[in-house]
Image (cartoon, rainbow, N blue to C red; front, side, top):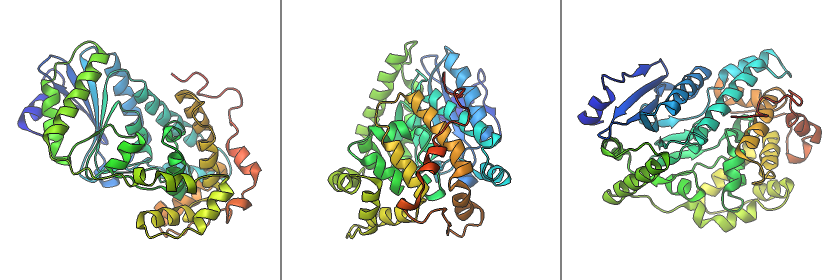
Length: 388
């Protein structure tokens, strides 16, 4: 950042509060208002979220939500590789292995608190700007989706890769994937396709495009913005400021592959899950991106395929809170009854990248398994009955 921003961030009136993996700072502005800045600070693990980070962010954001001096929030990641590559699921893996076939307290606690944080961002009221530079995947996309002003850059790589580790696109995916054009959300969930900036803007996961090097200019502009006490007005002013900045810089945004392929994707994703699997297994194309999507799908967990497909059938009838309720049930159960442990073992623990999924194809997955995963382990006393 520039010296102006550095000095503002070190404002004597509001000193930075730091924990090992998340840094909280405030940016002083000419209006007298403050901008709260949250920096995920685990560069070595691509800023992956663990439970302590979720708890620290939730506590600080709740304080800032009530603080009349705080006009806006910014979420950022340390380093130049990632905003956030997802959740740190190793602890969930070890707990699930130790309690084989049982829903663990660790899974209940982690997913509940992560989703509460995501819900808080979605409903924050004040502007939440997310600097979605570099890798934004899984739990990182859950944070980004909750922002009101989501900025992507030429290095952004955005995906929901859960099908490769025996999960499904959670962290609000049931809400935002089902509101994309056509069958796009289903395609992204089944194939873990990595979107670039133009793709993210097309499907509604990003609002603005700036170059990576424009971050200092953005913070400088935020420091001089005329912030008010009215959140709606602050939303408008921030939006205008970013748009003006976008018009002043050279933006090699490029074209969206997804936008140009909507018809192809809709045809591939039409019909039953069996229909989709058959098409994908026999797909021939000259497009490298589509072949990669095909191969990732075919290498994914058949249980995950069913969960992604079930998720897509929810459509847009559920509220955001109801989507998180559906996801909390599915997530804690898939750790116990799905392919989660094997997927994490193959990708993150042994790193052999040779998962041995429980079932070999789409038609061999028993309906009873999916029903078990989608049945609340809390019965009627679900933690998200009154999500707020």
